[in-house]
Length: 356
Image 1 (cartoon, one colour):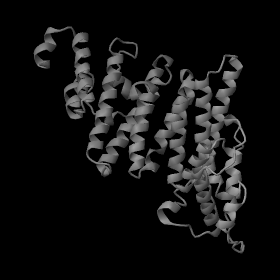
Image 2 (cartoon, helix red, strand yellow):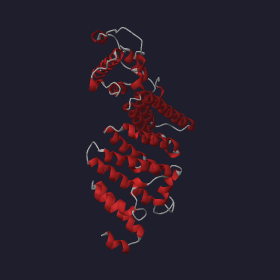
Image 3 (tube, one colour):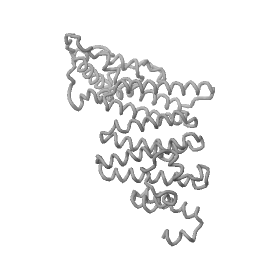
């Protein structure tokens, strides 16, 4: 069909419908067909190299945008690049939940290409939609990273998540409260990578930095004097809670750890007696009360702390350190109390003023 009608139709009309057909095939989950009979067919008129072969920003521009980003075909080209990246990703996902080494390398190469694309468009504010919109660039990068993280490759995707965070922070049109949930998601993904690599110090430092960025954004909005909507207030609250959980995930353990070489006799906790004392019963409970407003946020913090990769009591049993064992038992006790609803009415705290 393409060979018959391409010569009979105006180029712009033909290319638009070529990509429309490719989008339809993609939505129908026919990824291989969409790739070869749509997106790649369009891109081959500019460059026959694979996306993984693109070396840097200059090479990217020469290959796909020799007429610049202001040309009439630029939007279609970005759309085709988006489609090809997504097709490659979903074809790898179809092969299995645990990609082999070649699959991992293929996805890392796509991440490298997306980063080059983001480097190319970042200086142009008119193209900021590419950094967020249409599940492309930072969103597409995040989806690939999450897939590789679930397969145990967190350390390899960390640099790409950090780059996505940098792009959001340096693009002025994206520095608004409407993009705050997405920024918080990226920030938390970076922290999870650090925790996966047992780099809890870096995770806490990054989470505190992210909280500072959110606080700066809130102050900028206050300076404008505009009315803050309920949706915006909720976005700030949720973002703050998510990142405060990342801080809690380390800070709940570290103050209780015994310094090396220091002997301290084990003081056995009596959980039955603890249940009879008023809340907060333990140091862990007091930290929860100080840092979080509402039992839902506290329960989320408990779950995340129990999933810390350096401790992992739910997967491997209690850790060897007595002090960390106490923290784990206190977390489980707090979680049980939160689920049973036995806590007293919490003191109202501002979500944007967590005691960190």
